[in-house]
Image (cartoon, rainbow, N blue to C red; front, side, top):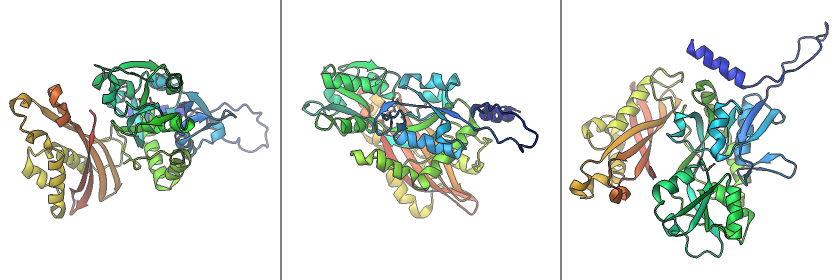
Length: 407
Ligand code: GLU
């Protein structure tokens, strides 16, 4: 019953434009009315999403939105574009003002309480934009005593508040374009947000502005949708995979971003329904055994149950996998002693993609808790990406990659 209601809500979300027509007896069956979509995007992020002189939006986010709409059966002339500034995205989604948001919108655990995401479709990282003449600012640690601008409601503002608040003068605006205007006039010393956004502004002001070039967070851009709309989430996630697989992703990346000098990270692993798919019984095509094995891998990976972990790993790759886990788990071997004895960790599976009955990719996030601030640098969060193979009916972890991320 619940599921039926959800599907109905999706159908209603894709607004049927009212089509008044006279019903003439021999006009044949009426043509289906054109479907329309309202999509939230940024209006002032060159390379990702701007409005040209003719008012038409362009950029990588726009291409992604148009591709998704196309696969949902909606042509570009039936899309209504709505500005979605950083702080407005959750409200626009939950009030039903937009059908979905494609606006440099990072998937975070906090936001997943309020909205749902499909994707991710792009990886980026927070960085700094400064004047070309600036010599003193290269990394966020250099911002002590300086003024940095970012958009309210962004993960970029969050990060500065949480990690660098002690010395940095943070000032926020509604949009990054307003911050850039202030950087050009000298009102602020730096602008901070994702490198992919900053690269667009640097490209617009050659010889005047530059990106520092040291990503200090990892941002996974998702398509924001109304909370709990699993049907739309699954459909858009599948469409994003298609966009990456058929070359459209790369083409748009080259036209809009690489051509302007941006050095992108690889295309992301696209999850099945990132905020939901890891519970058995979800309306996805995932094998429940796969789900339970990925959870078991995550639970045993931290050398606490070594035998258990080894039993889940492909024997021929077990040593290589051990090395990765040891390499990324220096935290318990630092001789930090009693001061960190209360430190703990949580491992959460954040996404599983099953490409065929016998292969799958999954990502799990390891977060450390109860770590004294001065030892935080030894306890960076880790994202593990694992490849799973099903052999003789049971799933095994056959390769693993790891990445430090900011909590
Ligand atoms: N990706 C970050 C976020 O979602 C920063 C960019 C933005 O504000 O759109 O907050």
